[in-house]
Image 1: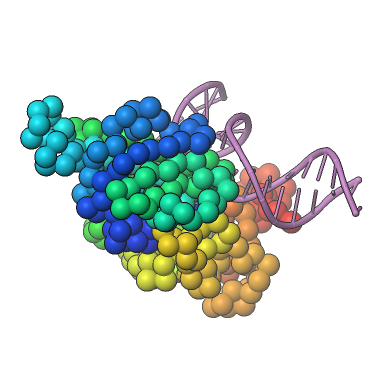
Image 2: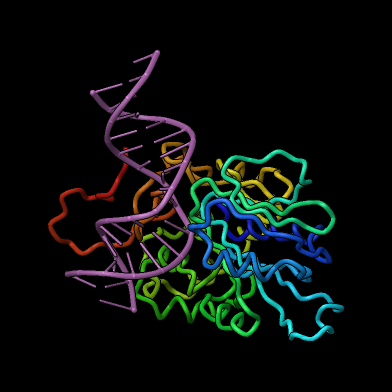
Length: 299
DNA sequence: AGCTCTTCCTGAAAGC
DNA sequence: TGCTTTCAGGAAGAGC
């Protein structure tokens, strides 16, 4: 599923072909994942793409009226087309003669005859248009960029929280961009069990987590993301980082570090993969324990 | 504050 | 064989 490294890979690909292009026309299929399809279809034609950036897991495509039409009168302020790929979203630039992938729901016709297409099997993605004036507020709702946050800041943010460390890593208002794969891989590298309570971690552990999140994301970007089933970049290519996963979807297989069998359990509502030996479970209060291990096992 | 449950959606895989 | 059920998961919202 597209998380920060996958979205970054898509953005880097789009940056090679979109800036400078003008949107000629917009066509929609299903629109239940689009906030304001009519507005998008109305406002984008005639606007030129000036920038493609990433905010967490969001792709931000900045568009402006071209100089000539702006000079003609009506004030045309920049707008941002914001795209979240959800679970199965894909953005691809294709020639208009290329055949359609199934579940393609948005077509942006460009002035060079090509099309930017949005495909999303499950439609868990999201698309919206933001005027520039609302972009800062949108950005403000998101947590800090995991590749930018400093070690001290990271420690302060986590040490003040009572939540499970896995839940915090996934919380987009704390850190933006980390999803299930990279949360599990980061926790394994930092040797922390996903159910550990953040405020109970010591400084050394928090520093290790900060470092591993950053390292894992950087490595995953280098490998162009992870393709489990549905992720493909803007050129339709698969990622390669899934070949280097140490725990994600490796339940039942031996740990690369110690050979203990990797387990899967639900933590913070998400399937979580960990090595029970490298990542010891937090101490639990001695209560009536029916199943002394993790009582939420699958299989 | 933070946890769990539910909803959205489809296709793969398991169950019968 | 073929139909039915279950499940995965990012994010948001409800309820505790």
